[in-house]
Amino acid sequence: MKIGMLTGGGDAPGLNGVIRAVTMRSISEYGHEVVGLKRGWKALLSPEEDTLMPLSVDDVRLILEEGGTILGSSRTNPYKNEGDPEKVVKQMEEFGIDALVAIGGDDTLGVARRLHDDFGVQIIGCPKTIDNDLSATDTTFGFDTAVSIATDAIDKLRTTAKSHERILVVEIMGRHAGWITYASGLASSANVTLIPEVEPDLDEISDIFRARAARGDKWGLVAVSEGVTFSSDFVTQSAEKDEFGHVRLGGVAEGLAAELKERTGIDTRHVVLGHLQRGGTPTANDRILSTRYGYRAAEAVANGEWGKMVALRGDRIVTVGLEEAVSETKTVPPESYAMLKSFFG
Ligand code: F6P
Image 1 (cartoon, protein in one colour):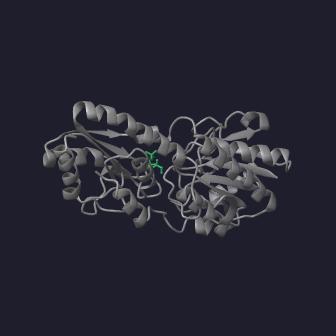
Image 2 (spheres, rainbow, N blue to C red):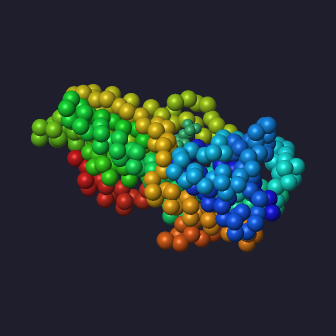
Image 3 (spheres, rainbow, N blue to C red):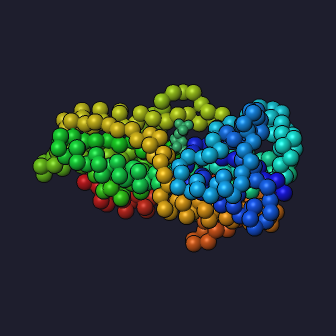
């Protein structure tokens, strides 16, 4: 069997771990052929000269510790224009690909599901996102790395915030789910952590910093998720949407820093962590999780478990229907945030 593999959406540390494990097991244990498809769904919609990347065991053996994806990625949506899904299926046939392993978040997996349902494409999904917002799996690789980077950044910002008696407002990725902010705010003991799931109360936050200043601590740290809304409005970098209809979030920290300065009289600065959170080498946990996903995905292909996605449930890797994978955004539960809030101040 010839397996095509692609990575779609924003990259996440650990993608190469999946690519490595799928390739090594598919070739060594099942005798399959594996070919990488470069730049996500673009590979099958508008292929370029270098789209096909044949993968051998030797090609992938040493990529586990490398961040990013050797296959490249894009946010191409084959369901955006009429007739495009048919082109994708035809292109697969032209490449002689029998089955696909699609590694991505809800957008990529949503396309995978539709191609399977509409055309019977033999497909296995693998969940990926630093945002950790997929409900069908306990966690996704990339999340642990992003949390470590954000935690480390907040820890570093604390020393300079103290020296200069400033409030530092740190903007953290995660779209409409506050997982990275929640976890890094908790791990770094930020004074206030704000997530999209709960609209912030500016009076309450200002009171916290006024009380700290009254105790002699005229400094502080705020971890704020890029998707936090004020009066139900998102702060966006531009109104332009990607092919899946997402706006580019960004700018909430700057506005919040100005507002806190105005209200408390304490000097403020803001920092946007941005794509640093997706860069560099994966943590040991993400290397392990991505390897386990890839190993099981190769088995799912060999078993013909089409239309399924690998998922972590407890300490086991299982397969679940792709429809489950894309049905719901997993957000931070109110009780978890209540626990975190009890440490504010
Ligand atoms: O979904 C992953 C993510 O990193 C989000 O946290 C963030 O909002 C978005 O991607 C950024 O996308 P891009 O890389 O296209 O700027």
